[in-house]
Image (cartoon, rainbow, N blue to C red; front, side, top):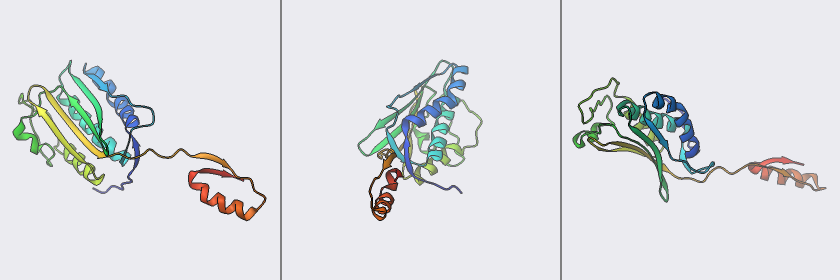
Amino acid sequence: LQYSFELVPVSVSESFRIWRDYVGGVCKTRRIELVVDDFEMDGPWLLADGEALDKVGLNFLSNAIKYTPEGGRIRVGAVLGESTIRIEVEDTGAGIPEENLEDVFALFGQVHGGTGTSYAGTGVGLALASELAERMAGRVGCESTVGEGSTFFLELDRCPGPRPLVDILLVDDDVGMLKMVGMSMSDYGTVHT
């Protein structure tokens, strides 16, 4: 992959909102219930490349929509560990036979669901998701039961959210001191003298 990565704090709640907005209309049209976990506005946070995270999450959702029948359900959620966050996309599709689970993330792999139903695809999306996860120091996986559905997951490191920037007013009659203190405080916000 020729892609420039920047691992930064990314809000899970914001990512979930973006994904919900992106696939919500398709789910409604296909009469698939979309359930998205709700978190506080500014968290939880994980260490990721925002664009790569969206590619993985939307790939999982695209596959869930493809394999979930009308009247089914897709859930987007997160399991908060002490040092990691596991993002999950769970569907009520046909499921994947256990003997095929190891091939799910293989390049050009086409795993057919438990009903034998086949869908068009290149077999690249989940391989790309796996590579993106590795480049973000994470991992992907899948748990599935034939006849019940599948849960695809991405596990990444938790991190604190970004510090809020503030306006700082410095007042001193020593101009040199103002410059020195102002330079050291500039990482925390906008400095006014």
